Length: 252
Ligand code: 3PY
Ligand code: MG
Image (cartoon, rainbow, N blue to C red; front, side):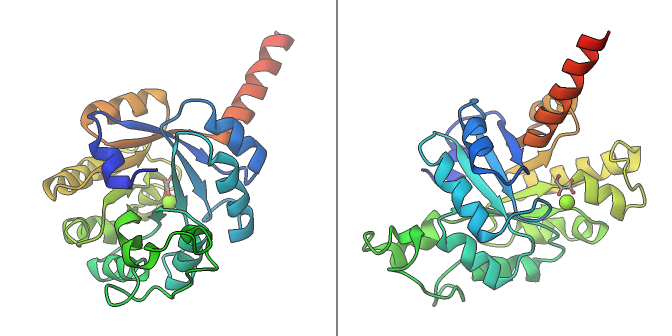
């Protein structure tokens, strides 16, 4: 599977993704067959552990879909565990400064490039030692995306985007709205204007921008705006909305 940057750079246009929050191998595999460009496995808000994420990663491995994992927090221990089980691209929530972004990049690289702890022959990422050059080349395969989702992050977005090793920036409208005083209303004009400012700063730094779209219309608009990767829905949304719509239709 290609690196995040190679995957983004391979073609123009937005990559359309589906959020995985069911924390389930079997539904993850179903979603991997649907044709989405990427799947995001959520360790921040879904009931996932490294163990449950491993099963989902194995379930989608046969399918041509880019896999991204979101750790609950960008600390060095969690990052090392996610990389060891074989995730290549990480989306780290709640990043608010260039220093924090640099620490996340460092946590994803072995010394001397960073501080990632070393497990080689025991990690799935190295194919249990079969990949002889793993330690020397792991940094080339890792993609780091940081989330911009607060007023503080917004103020520092240009500096965060400029950090070497930050491969992409992803706007979280829900947390951004909350941080700006519009909890539950990411469509508030102030939030929408903040998203546009963040997008401009990310693009000015030459980095790809991603976003969690609010609905299909928003997804199309963000893709047309130039967002390189757009989450257009969630596994839970497909199930819950599909179930509700079916029931409504049959009861009508
Ligand atoms: C947010 O909107 O806050 C996210 O983290 C992504 O959905
Ligand atoms: Mg968020």
